[in-house]
Amino acid sequence: MKIMSIFGTRPEIIRLSRIFALLDKNFEHIMVNTSQNYTRELNSVFFDDLSIRKPDYDLKVNTEAYGIEVADVIVKTEKLLKKENPDILLILGDTNSGLSAIPAAHQGIKIAHLEAGMRSYDLRMPEEKNRVMIDHLSTVLLPYTHYSRENLIRENIHPSKIFVVGNPIIEVIEHYMPKIEKSKIFQKLKIKKNEYFLVTAHRSENVDNVKSLKNIFSGLEKIHKKFGKKIIYPIHPRTTSKMKNIEIPKGVQLIDPLGFFDFTYLEKNAFCLLTDSGTVPEETLYFKKPCVTIRESTERPEIIEAGSNILSGLEPENILRATESITSGKPDWQWKEALGDGKTARKVINILHGKLY
Ligand code: UDP
Image 1 (cartoon, helix red, strand yellow):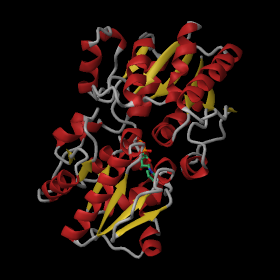
Image 2 (cartoon, helix red, strand yellow):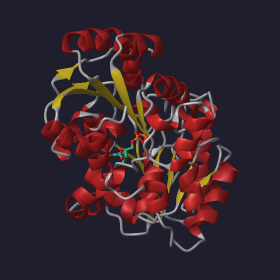
Image 3 (spheres, rainbow, N blue to C red):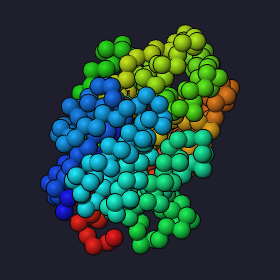
Image 4 (spheres, rainbow, N blue to C red):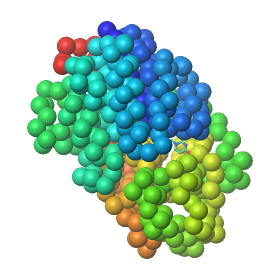
């Protein structure tokens, strides 16, 4: 059986890393990097860190503007799907690279969708529109949790197509823990355990709007004043490009995006995280670290229900209040219900091998 995986961003590469290895062992596997995130620090660095083999194709999609990017993904993946004619296309998540589902469905190629069923019900997010489209074009849906499964059933997707497989990030962290523990990032940044906040923010609805971006920095200023701890912020290129009129408050240290081992080491040892990422709240639940999601909505209510995460919105005062609240509890959160059992890769392979769809 021939399986084609198509991906292109940092979180897709990280989450799929353990699954790639098993796909290579079990199937004829064609790996396709769209290079939607095209900088080394958001793409190729993870191939080196996570020992991922060289993809069979690099589509170098044009990311100049939304329409150009989507069109280029569709045109280039259509051509490739015709040439390779895989039995199944495997995609993960909600990026524009996942819109390769459109030409695949058009050609009658079966689609397996990992991370299916997440819904923020917030259509301002480009990702939300992609999630709905991809799920409804898919043949087999592989949500992380029963919460996501319920979302799919409410949208009339037949239960026989849905298999809950858990969150693949757990086995990535567990597999690489010895390397994470060896990180030298503390010496480099001159920081100590629990004495700093770690921040990431790059969602388009947050940083493409100057007011929202200013609010985030104003929230960080209040947090530094209140807690007196350093704030480390590895800044995503999308945010860097929007920083022209933004003043960086005292106590905030902007650094380049980090490799996976250094970043997860910082997560594991931080006092608290603030983020608009989807993956970071999951990783911090695993590490039992408090985390504030700086957004108006979330597609991951499981993480809030687990207790380690709080949704603050974008008002600086609320960002501070949420941080005070989440850091005042006892970090005894349990992760298995929200994140699965860390055996996702094997389940995905079994489902793809089986006669289940
Ligand atoms: N990450 C990283 N270096 C950084 C920031 C994040 O390796 O400087 C990792 C992080 O551990 C997580 C993933 O990148 O696994 C999250 O990516 P991102 O926030 O871009 O995507 P999202 O999860 O929001 O889709």
